[in-house]
Amino acid sequence: MGGYYGGRLAQQGHEVSLIARGEHLQALTEDGLTVESVHGDFYVHPFATDDPSEIDPVDVVLFCVKSFDTESAAVGLDELLDDGGAVLSLQNGVDNEEMLADIVGTDRVWGGVTYIFSTIKESGVIEHTGGPAKILFGHYHDLGDEPPERSTLAETFLEACEAADGMTADYTPAVHATLWDKFALICAQAGLTASTRQPLGRVRETDESWGLYRQVMEEVVAVAHAEGVRFDWDPVGKWMDAMGEGSGGQYSSLHYDLTHGKRMELEALHGSVVRRAREVNVPVPANRAIYAMLLPQQADSSF
Image 1 (tube, one colour):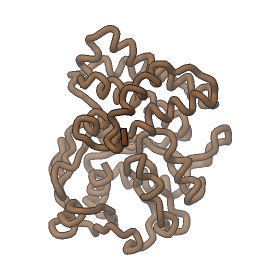
Image 2 (cartoon, rainbow, N blue to C red):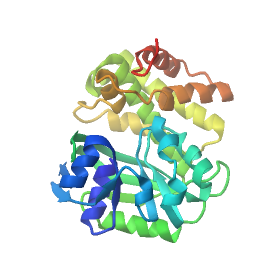
Image 3 (tube, rainbow, N blue to C red):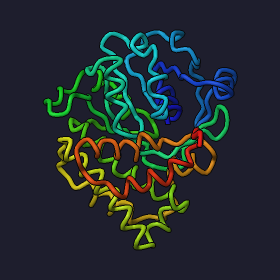
């Protein structure tokens, strides 16, 4: 998704640098970035590197790496940010913002979620197949503290996203609730599609599986409540209604990684739920079962 959003902002005329590696980096450097999108194909040729020190300090870093790469990818992040700059995490899970805050400071971290289906089709080519390509973000802060006022930089970034083709953005002061809201959905969608090897539609039409989908979300929300997160809406009802409609062909990135022999973000999803639940004494049997079933199948496992 980083390539898609970076490409859209570069298309709008903003100075964008992409951080990549391997064959993808080589293609970006030599041939530029091609995006095949349901909102219209386009081509840009921004600067690309695998060395953040080659990039002049920036206003905003879109941090889109897998959660298990957060700490290693954040090395040098403090030097990459300009004075007053911010890093926007658009990652799965609810642990990444805290890790980033430990590295660059809480006041320089934005928490965010995004709704987009995009993959690297081949080196130098991003394929965007669906989703509204929307970013919802806010200033990260310690849970229980009053949310900071929206900064001038956040306003500027919001305006840039709104002006770009093929993407949109919105700001929320309820950053913790927003992160946990999507976390609940991801745990259900990822857990059920990966453990059953079936798309959402098959899960949805199987009563026992659809009930488990709900239970996974209910458990995640219960952990959030126990930690002090407050919602002004019903996350479970919202997502059950939303995911109960549509074609049902969706899987999840966890399913993709599992079926393609790649490392899964299992620890950032159900592993995190299980660990956090233990700390606040909340039972999470559905999440624990999914975690236990998928853990031996982790690609980097030594079993």
